[in-house]
Image 1 (tube, helix red, strand yellow):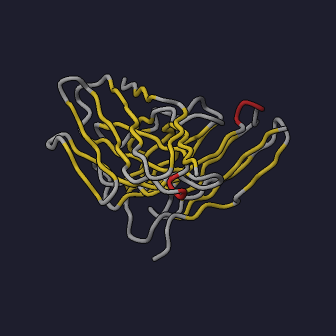
Image 2 (cartoon, rainbow over the protein chains, first blue to last red; image 1 turned 135 degrees about the horizontal axis):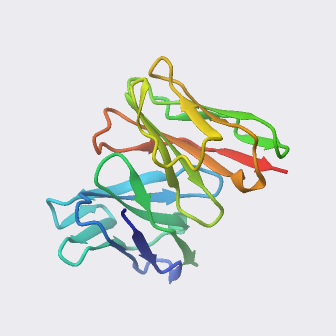
Image 3 (cartoon, each protein chain N blue to C red; image 1 turned 180 degrees about the vertical axis):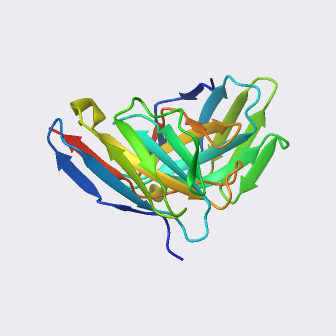
Length: 110
Length: 114
């Protein structure tokens, strides 16, 4: 079955700097890659997703890239703000079963 | 509009007891999912409903876990003979039609088995 690895587990960046989270997946059949943000005591919230027919997608300060050959995908957050502090999960899916990484705790330092 | 709602938000029970967790999906969403999230981990898939039927229950850990969705809307996750290892956050999600469409998550039910 699918396995998703996510790095780093914890990331601290200065406010205004960029943050990058990287993931790898194992199943070449996976074709959908969502990213979720989870704040303390809340459910995961979708922030951006990408499908396997594109290599990059951008939404304001957030961008995702996908390298199908290497089975890598990454989340880039630019101009980080205090409200970006949360746990971020990458995930991969071929069908309706989403397989999540273990998460990255992002701290935005003042 | 209203998002996915889950009740109760917190549940404390004793080992060996039976619990029911409820999920109300977004109105009109035909697909419903249950995940379990242990502390410090990502959500793990349990079961997926398309309408009233369980399309994929491969994530249910054992036969103590069962879920229903009798009218194709509200779903109930049932856990029999609870064990301390069942303590986790149980998340419900829904999507408009399944088939890889975006899944929207509820706030979860935090289950603690003493």
